Image 1 (tube, one colour):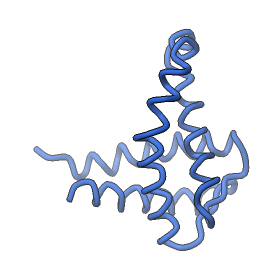
Image 2 (cartoon, one colour):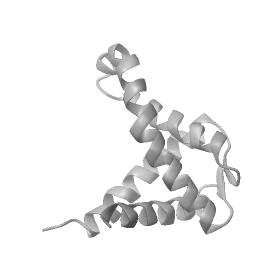
Image 3 (cartoon, one colour):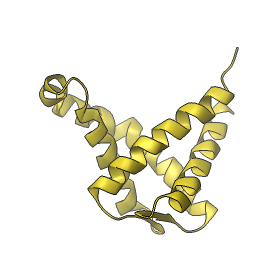
Length: 113
């Protein structure tokens, strides 16, 4: 149940970012929900592989390179989901930063005690 709530909150954050950022667009809510599912799957499957492959540069940059990996995940979601558009790498980076911020705030609201 908690996973479904997190997916819905991520979809809401994606919709908000689609309206707030000029370099990102999401058309209907169902597309945002699909983006949330695709992002969850990409973070589950692709992100650990990318982290292991880029471990030396991640250590060298003290973890800052993980922001680039998050932007790559956003760009991959852009490729897979029709109706979700990101206008380039820098918009993907900004989108991933704000999405992480929104998710941190929204997920803190549903945290169990």
